Amino acid sequence: MAQLAVAGGGAALGAALGFVIPGVGTLLGAQIGWALGGVAGAQLFPQRGQDTQGPRLTDLTVQTSSYGVPIRVATGRIKLAGNVIWTTEIEEVASSQRVRGGKGGSRGPRQTTYSYVLSWAVGLCEWLSPSPNAQLLKIWLDDRLVFDAEAATGVIQVPGLTWRFYPGNETQLPDPLTASIEGDDAPAHRGLAYLVFERVPLDRFGNRMPNVTVEIAGTATRSFPEQPGQPPAAPLFASSPSDFFMGSGWSNRVAVDYRRGRLYEGRRRAGTFGGGADEMIRVYDLVTMRTIGEHRIDQVLGHVFPEGGPPDDSSTTASILHVGVDGFLYMTGGQTMRVPLWKIDPDTMRGVAYFGPLQGSNPVFDSDDTIALFVPMQIASVAVPQPDGSTRSLVIVQGGQAGAVTIDAAMMSYVWGGRDAVSPPAIPGVHGIFHTDRLDVQLVPGDRRPDGADLWYLRGTGWDIDPRIEVIRLTYSPALAVTRTDVPPIDVQAEIDTGGARPLIHHAWWDASDGTLVLTIRSCPMAWCRSAMILGGFCRRVRLARPRA
Image (cartoon, rainbow, N blue to C red; front, top):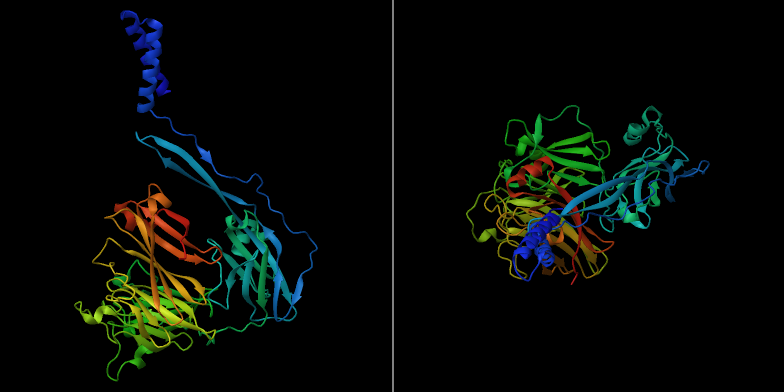
């Protein structure tokens, strides 16, 4: 409309000038004025492109199972397909964003895309005889293995996959989701083993409900020996989560142990700085989230220290926890800058080995820092295939000042990394309290092949340069030779979000099904990055293919 107004004004002005200029005339003057006014209007008021919408389902109903389908009666270990016993309608989730306009500052068209989620329950079987220890071992959605309780590799990550398993006992209660929808009519399905899937994204399955196949065992045994947890009669002491400032906000304070069905959390005595007798590891049941054990750090690690030298807070703060691919619990400890890495047997909750100094310290940068764990921020682990068919476990610790250090988990000995690694060059450590321009790091175990295993190093840049995510791939050969490949960085504004600011990597994993890195990032204005991290901020999931060679 504004363009037409300017063009009309040009026509009126042209007609007036044509009337007074000999040889031009009113009609020709109006035509020239309209053309010139149209050009000026287009420059002053550029038109916005048309809004667009992505593909959208027209039918949101779900085909359900019929009555009368036989229920399997099982015993021992069995692989079977589930039968849908409850479902919601497909839920449509719309996401809109406006594309940045061109020159002139115009508002671009709005693009709307649609995604779909679904919740449903799948009946599995009844047990021939009561099964006090029924376990879900594997889940396939269509042909994708999405859960495996017996292995740490080969599982395809499905973003947003949430499920709950009910073993089929006579005391199980209705699922919270079905109860919230069906109310008092929600059945508990006592005697029936079943699965509930909650708001699963359907984009990986052609926007339809996938076929569910599972492997379950009525008398399951765990692949890693377990000592039964004994719930404490009362907490050891009043406590709060451990939170030493060197890693605060940058790393997890808990570790999930899928093999044992446990979760470990570091906690410190209320009113203290923690460490030693003032620090503990609390163990939760991963299903019920009930506390099944509490272990004081001085009792877990005290036997490692010389007689008369009890552990203190310089090396025994539960800073960063990680369950390695070998099943051991790894913990960085200490309220100092150079700290040890502890290796703990989760079944006995006793320290078995350590890497680095026994007591922490705050050193001046010197030659010893070349392999030191200096301000640790994250731990990851990979299993490197060996010629005899076994694997060799490596633990990688990202330091805030000394870079990434690779450690042989069996020997707790140095392999590669640190400040002055040459072949290949070290990954620099520019993080922490001294360098706020690069804070965000993720270590992502990648592809595993007979000739080696990959680890992806992702680092979000900070305020002083264009927003991008640096990408480095480390490949460990069976002989533990390390190859470093610097991959072109991810340009946040070009590849993810045209208006994106400093990227904060919320989570990242490797999808073996199609060889891609999957990232969940937060993008926020510079001045509000820390607030956005605390309050939730803007979150987006992206899938990025990176070449293997």
